[in-house]
View: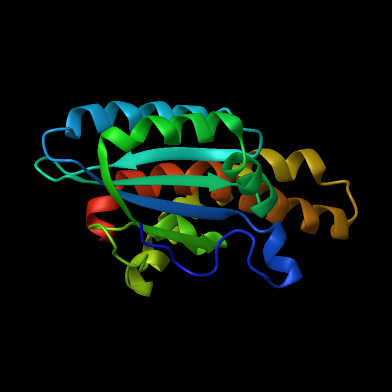
Length: 194
């Protein structure tokens, strides 16, 4: 098994510990065992989504390939570590020994940019798409939220002090972008972003 330095227990700056974290486990199924591995991967990602602090999990697999990428997103490193240490995950990893040839890479990223990291093959580094694509997707995603916020929320809080209104805007918009909009938009545009 290949390992990548900077695992979840590595020393990190204090502020990074509270950022959302995305981890990608890249695996290669044994020849002829791809369907079994796909079922195992589905079971694992479903179990991951039931873990407190999980923001989502998905499996990327191209037809005809033995390579699978399991992407899991958590609110912070502590939530990720709870999942990594869980007995459920340990039991599922015991089951994979007969159908997996190897785990080819483990990669982690934190921050908003993680929604754009999508590996294309086993062992690939998680590289974001070009910045202009990230910018364009972010503008297209945030504009409707800003418009709706201006139309429906601002009139309701017009009497609030300016500092409270100003605090509400990034709180609502960034929360929706991080946890609701960007996961959906980046998933829908995955092919174009790569």
